[in-house]
Length: 344
Image 1 (cartoon, rainbow, N blue to C red):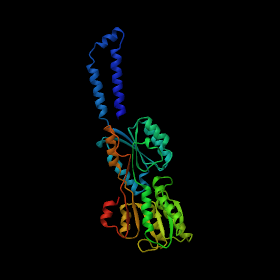
Image 2: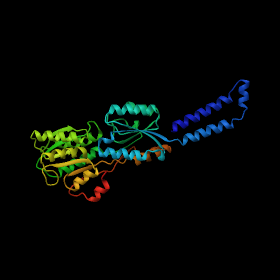
Image 3: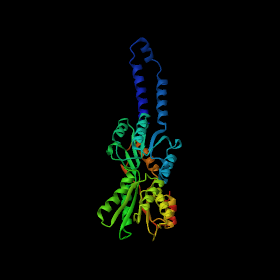
Image 4: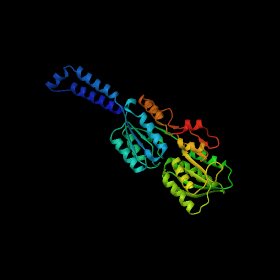
């Protein structure tokens, strides 16, 4: 928006300059004419432009990916409205190349801000450099990327590595004689997958009594997770932990356990772990059918709005990276108040 205002002011200044420098008789006559109406018109255009909506291009993952993503998308749509001063366009994909294409289109559309939740951490340098060269502010949300910090103004994200560490530390505290884990991963290469997988991989590498029975991506999908667990059951594999990187995949895994008559939850055969804190998932903890759920806070829109207002005022954001506050929930200590407060 500021770039458009500046352009209009430059046009107005050039127009007045051309009038003043006219060399012909007709030009002299024009120069001596009343320019107050022209000046007023230029001022009116500038004032009108300054009241324009802030143009925002928002690139997110598929809202149907999970309950977390649905809540995240709804939060953004509630904030970035015309009533709140925004002209927002949305693009969705679980594929990095499609998201990059969307970013290129938003740059061509001359948005003021590009908001990005990247499907993959890699591959963003070139397009974000293009955005920077075009004077477009970039704000990351939900997920980090592997790019120089100079390519974006701010990042409002979850600490996915900490989420994984909190979950794995909780699991270690259960004091099992051996850990035989079916590890169901999210979309490979995403920040959530890398953070939640990394902590478990490190623990398994460090401890002789920890074993990965199966490690496979279900791409955040419940049905694919159910198939993965069912295949391990059919193969006669011995396991006592389901470590699913989101609630929907944990739900799918539990469906396979139920179909096979395998008990799960507090004091049962299999420990079930999920992430995101959907309300229905926390209710499973409350009923002690699951054991652990790691919080991933989807409500980032108000933080982004505050940062945009700061930039629009001519200041830089106070913090380059804003980490959302999050925790993990244990089935043996969770309360109904926790479900009501933190369930999404």
